[in-house]
Length: 137
Image (cartoon, rainbow, N blue to C red; front, side, top):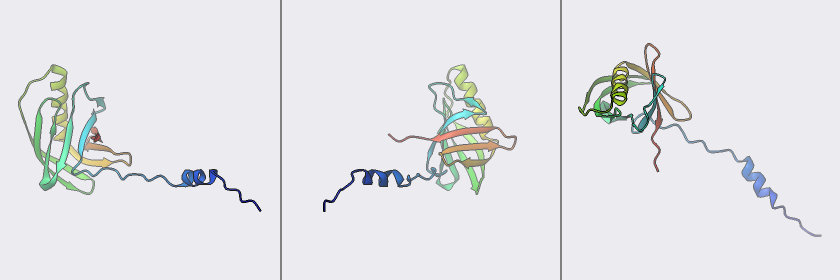
């Protein structure tokens, strides 16, 4: 009696194996890069970031200037304290974006991280800042 082996069996097993889905990034310790500020895309060639660090401190880049401040956090509520920033000047659109970002950041009251790794910071009036986790290359 001849034995027949199928080369398809391993492929079928691989195809049926469930994908491992990475959990969304944590709020704290992740560098978040803004994609939209109040539904407007971030100005080309600028980087607006935020990082929630231990001991209630935040830091990041507003598009032109570096900034720092404090925050309080519980479950899905986050409140940003007063922001301090460097005082460099940039082109008009970049400065306008940064002013808008800092103004909205001071009004943030809540956050949510979606399964696909999008962080939405939201103000009570519904305006949001949308971020993605910085990619590590």
